Image 1 (cartoon, each protein chain N blue to C red):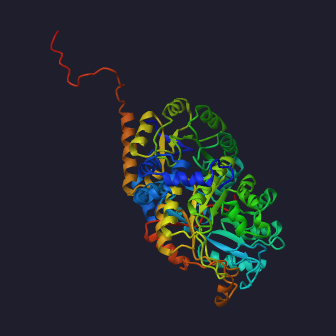
Image 2: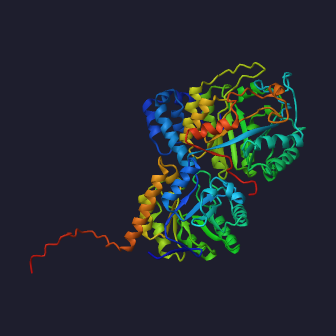
Length: 254
Length: 370
C-alpha cells in the first residue's frame, strides 16, 4: 500500500485508537501498547491539556512515538469546535479531530458546521481531520477546505455495527486526494480489515476496544487484522467471479 | 400524566398490568425500544426478567458510557424558600429549619472545599426565593464558580427562557428540575401555595432551558408521591418530547426516592428499592444514550451496583446544607439539611468503590473555556 502520510507525518501502523471509555489508565496503556498505534485521539473535555504531565490520559502516552490528536467531542457547532481546537493549539496540540455532533442520540456529525470548522482550523495552520458522514461530496469539500485527511463513519459512534455506509465509503476512497480514515462503528477486527481491503488508508476505533472484556487482547486483534488486510491489499487478490475455478486444473485433453 | 400523552392514567395502568411475560421477553429482545416497551419493562410481569434486563441494560450502558462513572457534588447556596411543598423541610412553614443564604465569599469557600476532593462538576442548588436568587445573582454565582469547575449545573426555581439564556452565558450548562408528580391534582395537593403551585410553568422548564441553549436537561419525579408506574410512563413521555424539541440537548434522568424529613411527612406511595432497580434498568434499556444519575438518598450498596448496569453518574460526599462543606461547623450542619442522606461516605470512599468494580472515575467531562 502507498505509504501513509498525514500532515507531513509518516505512519507505519494504520490502526488509530481512541482513549475514552477505558476502565483505568493501566488498561488503556496496555491497549495502546498492544495496538501498536501511532495516533490516538483524546477528548479535550476529558483531559487537562495544559498540564499533560499530570493528566491521567495524556501522561500515559509517549508523544515522541505517538501523535495525540485532541477531538472536539461535545461541540454542537463550528464556534465551539474552533474554540476547543484553539485551546488545544495553545497547549501545543496541532492535530485536531473535528467532531461536531449536536444530536445527542446518534452523535451524527453536522456537515454544515463541520465544513466551516475545517476552514477555520486549517487557516490556523492545524492538521485537521474532520469526522463526517460518509458523504463523498462533503469529503471533497473538506479536502478543498484544507483537511489533512477525512474520517467518514462506518456507522454511528459506539454502535459496533460495522461498515453500513460501505457503498459511499467506496466512492470517498475512490475520489479522495487526502487519506481516508474510516472512523466510528468499527466494532470488530474484521470490520477494520474490511475497510483496509476496500482501500481505506487507516481505521480508528475506540468503543470496540475499550468496552471489550479484555481491551488489551482486542487491541492486539485489531492491530493484527489491520496488518493482515494491508498485506492482502499489497498481495493484490484475484478478482471475485461468479463461476468456480478449480485450484488444481486437470487439463488432460489436448 | 404528562399532558401531551393521548393515554389516560387508567389506559396506561391497564396496558402495564396487562403485560404478559411474552410481552416483556419481546421488549427485552428488541434492539430499539420505544415508550410501549418501557411500559412492558416496568410492569409486574417484568420482575421475573430482571436478570435478563440487567444484562441488556449493562450492555447499553457500556456501549454509550464505557467503563466509566462521572462524579459530581451539589452545592447548596441557600435554603430560604417561599414554597409550601408538603414533603420538604425547606418549605416556608417549617420552623425547624435554620435559614441561610451564603455570601459570595462563603460560596467560594464551599466551592474550594468541594474542589479539593477532586470533584470537577458542580450542581448549584437553592430554595425558591425570588428576592434572593434572582437571575442576576445566580449568574454572578455562575461566573464565580465557572472559574473553579469544568462543568456547572443548576437546580433552582424555574426561570424564563431569557433567564436561562443569561444563566447559560454565565456558565451553567445543565439544569435539573424535578416535576415531583405528573398528576396535576396530586401536584396541587402537594404544592398548595407559592410560585411552585403552577404545574404547567414547572413542566415546561426543561423546554425553556433547552431552547436557551442548555446542554443537559434533568428530569425526574419524586418517588413516593404518586403511584410510580404511571409517573415513570409520564417521565419517559416527557423525555421523548424533549428529545424531539431540543435535539441538541441531552436528557438526564434521576430517580429521587422520598427520604425521611424532619417535618414528619409520610409518603403516600412509597417505592421499594427493587422497584427503583427495575425502573432504572428499564429506562437504561429504552434510553441508552441518556444520562442517568443515582441519588445520594440511596444506600451505598445499591449505588455501587446500579452504576455498573444503569446509571452513568453519581454524587460523592454530598452535603445538602448551605455551608455544609466548609462554612458550618459539623454539629450545626444537620439542622438545615433538605433531606436525610443515606450514602454518607467520604468522596474517596466512593471513588474507591467505583474503582473496585473495575470502572474509572471521571471527574472532568466538560471544559469551562468552551
